[in-house]
Image 1 (cartoon, rainbow, N blue to C red):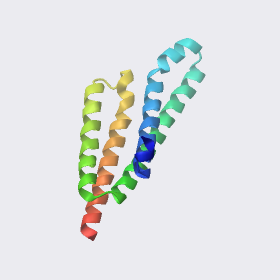
Image 2 (cartoon, one colour):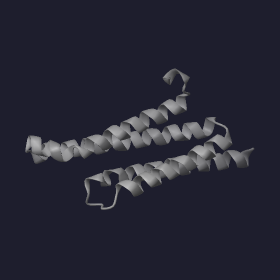
Image 3 (cartoon, rainbow, N blue to C red):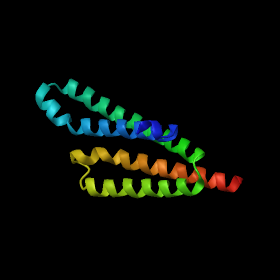
Image 4 (cartoon, rainbow, N blue to C red):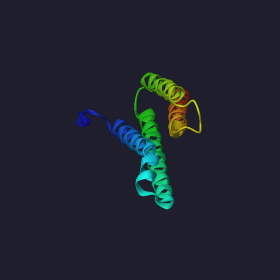
Amino acid sequence: MLADLSVPKRVVLAGVVLATLGTLSNLLAVPFLKLTHSFDAFRAYAEGTSAVQTIGLFVALVGGIMFARSEPLNRVAWWALFVAIISFAFVELMTRNLMNRTAIVVPAFYGGEMTALSMLLISALRLIRT
């Protein structure tokens, strides 16, 4: 299956997997604190998982830019719209209270919207240039 994917799609997939791992492991931060009873270890764990999520979102952004530069314009526009709608819906369904543990998905919303915006911007520049 991965052999059929182009390089930009593989980069996006790797970024999404990294961001998902960072988000899921951050949701396990409170049980980690209860297990270790060490606030320093908890803080290091929380910062590490947030870093993994941020790196994953950045890798997905770079993959989205690569995808926008190499694919046909109509496909890029549809994928950008899809990414924007899915990230918005995901955050709207997950976060009702920013003090809740599920507030960790808020950066995923910003990452998804930045990716969609960059894809649409590159599509517009490609359209203007042609």
